[in-house]
Image (cartoon, rainbow, N blue to C red; front, side, top):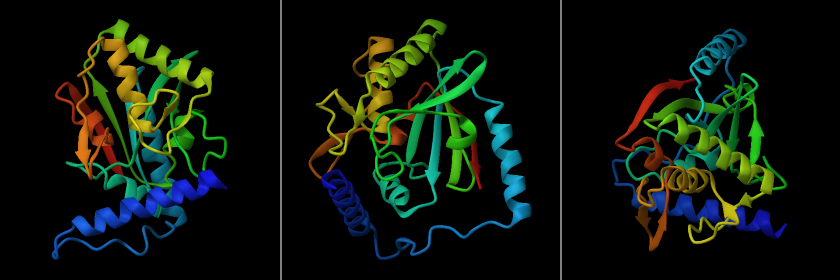
Length: 221
C-alpha cells in the first residue's frame, strides 16, 4: 500500500509540473487518452505490430507510449520529445525476441524487472505509439548490453519509485538502459542526463536521441 501511495504521489507531482510548464497556448492535459478501436481497426493494428516485431534485433531499444494517463504524465519528463513514455532492451534468445524492462505500478505488483514477449509489450490495446531505436554498437557491446539486462532481471532488481540515479539496486526504465550502456561501452558519459526541478534523471528521449541512435521505426496506433 505504501508503494502504491508513493507511485500515485509521483504521478501527481509529474502532472502538476507538466501542466504548470505549459504555455497558455499549449495543449491541455487530455481528459480521455484514447477510445477503444473497432474490430477492423484493431486487426490492422495487430498486423502493424507484427511488422514492427520483424524488425527487432539484439540490443535494440524498444519504445512505447501507453494509452493511460500515467504514461502521458511520464512522457512529459522528456525534455525534447514526448513521443514515448517507456523503453526496454531487446534480447534474442533461441531465435526469439524478448524485451527486458523496468516498470512499476499496478501493472507489475512485485516491481521486479520484467521479461516479456514483444507481442505483449507492443500490444495496440495498451499503447498509443511504439517504436524501435538502434544504437551504433559493436557486436560485443550488443551482446554485453543483453547480458547486463539479463543479469539485472536474474538479480530481481526492483523498480525505482524515487527515480534516483544514485541507487543501483533499484532502477526505472531509462535508468536501467542508461547504466547498462555505461557498462557495456565503458563510457560513463555515453548517455546524457536531463535536469529539471532540482533533479538529475534520464528521460526516455535521452536514450533514442543519442547522436549514434537511429529511429528504425515509429508507429502510431
